[in-house]
Image (tube, rainbow, N blue to C red; front, side, top):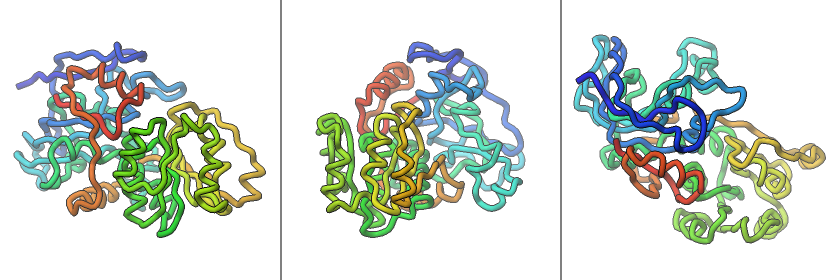
Length: 346
């Protein structure tokens, strides 16, 4: 076996630039493993890589997809901790391993930090070669589809709320875009820490599902353009302690407006745009913090999977689709028509 199917991007553009092809399987290095991918979880990052990001060089052609699960087929000559037949879930990024950030356990700050499906080939394929160090045992209680729904979004949400936000019991936490993968993960992590969750979304159907996940209050920002005033009411004029911000341009001003004195906005993305308006007086007079966040350190992956094995954190899957329908899956995500994760099956 020397060939595989893969969906690749050769040029940036709309969903139509996704091309399913037959290509070679890479050679297995001494510290690598060959896996058969059973499921790959989509993330908003897939859309960004397909569309292209000004100022960010994306290697083309590129196989998208950072979150995969499946079965190990072969291992390199130097690999001892992974065996053929093992059911795995992928730790979705690599780093140099030797810089000051890596040795301090802050791998996501490494200058050579690379996410699969972003800076190197990912999982929109049926066979892939990964570094053995990225292969972790799949929790037995999770299906392949459930396992592939977890890593990136739960890592991101954990870093935002726990590492950066230092969420604690009783905090008022605003989770924007509750229907997104990272939003649904954020609700669970905030509730796990006994916070009071105010979830926002653009449809009542998504808000109902957010309540099922544990959200205490919900706000439809498409119906209420001054939604931040409602948050002030909910919190008895105190404001939110943490705002989980990943929408950007369309919500950021409101996020700052609803923040409590000493509160934090933690930002991991900007799906609606990057040019935000900030009234600096509200930053220094209210002593607030605006914190950037990208991914998390490698040990967090293990923590997330441990909590998944215990049933404390649970993947949220909207639908499962064949990899051959990747174009349609991208259209669904672009239209924000899902709640939770879209999973592709090679």
